[in-house]
Length: 223
Ligand code: C5P
Image (cartoon, rainbow, N blue to C red; front, side):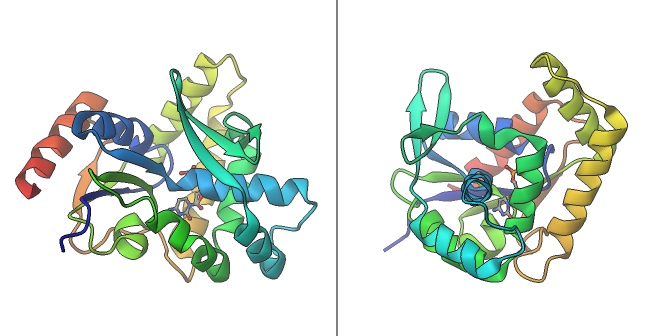
């Protein structure tokens, strides 16, 4: 039996995956999996439990008992850790850095694999992450790798922060983005890289509308 349709969207932070996958899920009526949120919740829970981000065994234990759920509300998808709404708390830069440290441990990634695959259900799934097309859903019907230059990604992030009324230093953001990329691209297991059969989209000089239209046209050729 043909497995449920998966649109795997991978790429570095700030390339526009979040906005693209949200629009694609709406367009095709598919469920959305934000896999980065899972690593972020694990990092947040680990921090609260006083664990060190290098302590792989304890992180695996935490991953195995992690009570994580997504809830669709009027204002978007909310992320819950137990009963606590951690949607905002997991989005800090510090927690993002911790998430990428947690995500570098091979056994932590294995512990989270089935949890991610369980999202593959009819009518279909849009999966947002770093290894959706390479590791989690290697047989996805559509794979897209969305990239953009670090400078453009830093500028977008700066604008997002400023719009949220937060302080945003461009040089600092660029440094953090570059360091996180480095860790994500160079880890031994599931490094950030395009699947061989992925459509490469460089959004450096594209608007979100152009990215969305290009992706939709490509996806329709695969349906
Ligand atoms: O996408 P987001 O910035 O929320 O992801 C946070 C971190 O989680 C990333 O920097 C990356 O290290 C890790 N991650 C991952 N694999 C995924 C999704 C996220 O390793 N599929």
